[in-house]
Length: 327
Image (cartoon, rainbow, N blue to C red; front, side):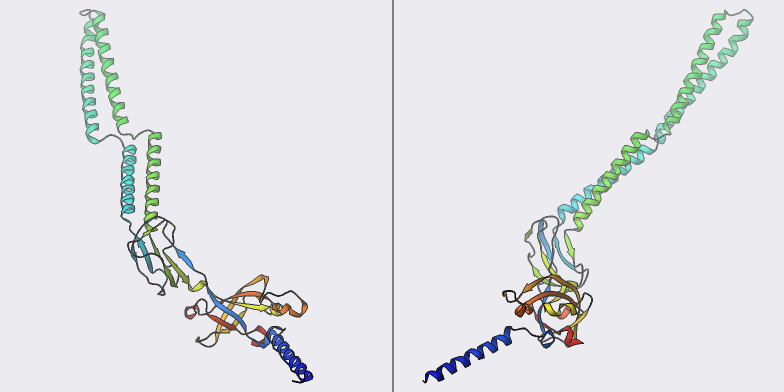
C-alpha cells in the first residue's frame, strides 16, 4: 500500500475513534439525555428480643403483606409460665396490701367484745361491793381498811375495762403506716414484673409494621433463633426509592420536594416520584482526573420516593426525565 494512503487511513481511524470517544465521554447537555438510575429498597430486619425455637412462620419470600399481618412467632411456653407466675405474685401482693389496710377479722373482734363484757361485769360487781361497804364503814361496823380494799377492787376493774376497750379500738385499725407503704411498694414491684413478663411474651412474635414485601425468610418452623437475630426481612413500601445521578452543571435545577418523571422496562407509563434527598457530596463516574473539560462526569446522587412503589422491584434500572427536558 502506498505510504501516503496508509497514513491517511490511520489518521481517519484515529479521528473516528476520537469522535466516538467524545460522543461517549465528552460534555453533554443534561437536557439531551435521560438520567440513569435504579430502584433501591431499604430492608427492615425483624427479630425477637428473646431466644427460642421458631414455632410459626406465616409468610413466604416474595410475598406481599399488609400492615399488622403476622410474620412469625417463637415458642412462648416458658414466657407464658413466667407471665403466670408474675400474675400470681400480683394477686398475692394485692391480698397482703388489703390485709394491711383493714383491722382484725370479725371472729377476733368477737373475742375482744366478750372480754369487754366480762370486764364490765367485773366492774359492776366491784362498784356494788364498794357501795355496800361504804355506809357500813361510816356507821363503824366495818373498819376503814375494808373500804379501801373495795375501792381498790373497783378501780382495778375500771382500768381493766378501759384496757379492753382500747384493745377493741386497735383491732378495728389497719397495720401501721410504714407496713402499709411497704405493702404498696411490694404490689407495685409485682405489677412491674408482670408488665415486663407480658412485654417479653408479646415480643416473641412480630407483625408487619407497614405494607411491605417479604425480602427474605431466614428461619423456618422448628429452627432455633437467637435473641435479636433477624428472622424475616421486609422491604416496606415507604422505604422504596428511585436513585439517580445528576451532572454537576445541572444540579441547581433540582430541589427537595420537586417531582420527577421516570420510566423503566415493563413498567406503567407516567411514573412519578418526589425528591427527598440530594447528596451534598459529588461522585465521579467513571473516575477521571478532574478538569474543566470533563467535570460533567462529576455527578450528585439524588433520591426520590415514587408515588406507587408497589410495582417497582429493587435493583431495577430506571431512566429519569431531566428537569430541563420536563419543562
